[in-house]
Length: 114
Image (cartoon, rainbow, N blue to C red; front, side):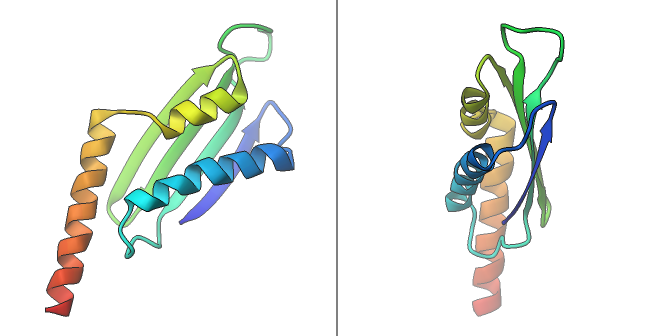
């Protein structure tokens, strides 16, 4: 899986990029082995420039490829907390799509091997 990271309103430091890489690559364990052409578009940053407190940091993940199109967003007062929540989002629709996609890939591989 390829991970593209974009920072909005903040500087993308190696620490932030490494944290995003670590958290988003954890999604790969839920994907079948044949899902190598997936792309995760990740955007982290401030959702507003004029607020100083509250839920001003956001993290967005858009997972696209091979018939899969999932989107998750989280806004928190801490950037790392927003990244954690967007990774752990428990959206039933996203989970269902991911499960159906996994089922499809496994059956396709089974069909190919006989």
